[in-house]
Amino acid sequence: MDRREFVAACSLFGISLPFQSFLQACSEDDEAAIVAGNFDGSVLIIGAGAAGMATAYLLEQQGISYQILEADTSYGGRFRTNNSFTDFPIPLGAEWLHVSESVFADTVNDESIQIPKITQRYTAADTYGLFSNGTLTVTELGSDANTFIDQKFINYSWFDFYDEYIVPSIRNQMQFNTQIASIDYSGDKVVASDTDGNQYEADKLVLTVPLKLLQLGQVDFNPALPNNKQRTIADATIWSGIKIFLKFSEQFYPTFLEFDDSETREGQRMYYDVAYGQNSEDNVLGLFSVGKQAEVYQGFSGDALRDYVLNELDEVFDGKASETFQDILVQNWNEQPFARAAYLEDNAPSSISRTMAASVNGKLYFAGCSYTQEDDWSSVHTAARSARDAVRELVR
Image (cartoon, rainbow, N blue to C red; front, side, top):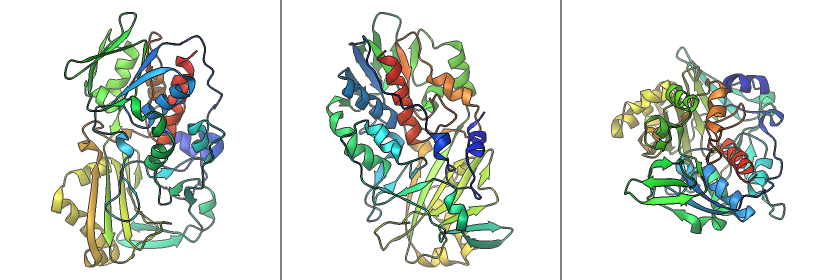
């Protein structure tokens, strides 16, 4: 089964929404308690994105020694936010909650911590536009709004959630500007070497770097990874990705806007109301695009990209976009040096993420949105669950 088939099996949605909507029963996996066994050694965690931080947090709860090595200047990976474009957080990566709110409590893993309501569901009165054959048709979501679970963060974001609940207990164990170039797990200890020649040693290592970086050969392994992992890395199709945010003086667009090519086997693209539900007077329209559709936008930059997007919207809305345009913000994941892409394609067989999630020799463990033990990937909640799976196995 691939992710698209999983979505089709789990969903009753009547339209295609970003990242697709999952019913709770199909999305949540085994959340059995993590029970520490005899392991009392040390752990290196490579990467301080969602999976790396979740891994560290769970190890902290178990009292296990760890260190996080992050190549970038700060934590967050692809799901950081921009707080200057408008008066609410703009998610540069993950923007929606795709499963039940219970995933927040699962990630925090502490019943004494109460998490307030931080997301909002879409309603029947929200609007969906389809531009097809030169004609825009706008309808209300109606009863379709009840069949999907996607929720929008309100004056908050996935990054804010991690920043508030996960980071405080692990921040002192993070080391930045440390790009790991090689991992040697041939001896009793695992030794990671960075691009400056510094070495870091531990009993076990959890690798959370994006799959694209492994595909680009940015990390060497000794001994080489098992053949099945090498084949999987080489064969995986990893989608390009871009998000564009446009500020306008008025709202002339529906909650969602799609095109005939918004959902294909090669990628996705969709405009959506970024300011939906926010306590803001600003009008911000977002464009989310991955795969082949994203590559069209990535062929432009600067003013040329702005003009291309405005022209596209002008065709739909009779020139309103250019008439009311104020500002633009672009997040091109392909240009993010320690991501270089969006995520594993939706059409990939689940064997890819499962193969990548498998540990090696009781020393190397893998966690991340492309390293899951389920028929779901490419989201923050799956990254967090993969961390739980990795830690559960590591501490046995």
